[in-house]
Image (cartoon, rainbow, N blue to C red; front, top):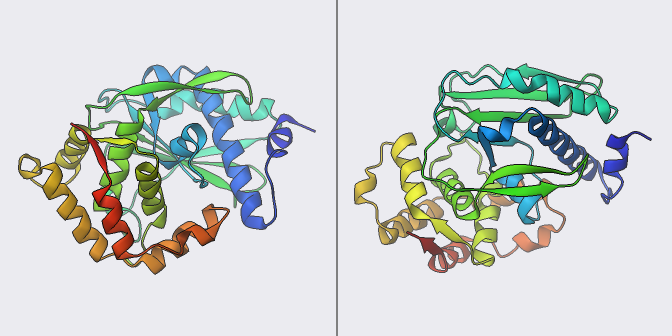
Length: 277
């Protein structure tokens, strides 16, 4: 049994969705190990839902690996780190391909996040191409964030540089407010928002303002915590939470926790938010 298969053993697999989620997560950890070997985390930090899942105990699976450079560098090339990623998978018993994903005009994907200075790649097995993870690097990130180092012990012991929790929270709130999918609702964002509030984490409001200022036309000098809450409640009032439940259900073990989701429920969650100014 190779190391890849050994890393799958702790996962409880009761369905094909469980199997796919487990494979995605093992792929993510091996990719992170390869990036570590290549020195990637001297220049970049890990953020997004997968970071919350792997390092902070978020109880949902996540498909993508999202990274931010520590400072703007339009000449950054993730291709410089492909060899250590490929070598790490080979050491674990799997052969992979990494290909650059060409960005097209916004369709049913998150149009507010299609930055010209982000590079997107797909990582997939040579023999099982239906299983893939997306890797995205923001080469011109909104700044004002802080980072921590977190330990992974498989496929070996190594440290990953991640956004701090208040800044992960800020990124998630920006996604909730401005991610636009045509006829879909990304319930995973709402699940993560609920998780932040339930665990009494604070939101770095200054970093959220920097994100809004860079990526949207909103005038951040007019946005206070109180007006932000009203803006968020307006977003909630226009959200179809039945569609949100359908989106997140394949990524969680217990869909019964979604039964309470409604406009009123999330409005009350907003009132429980804590902020770091």
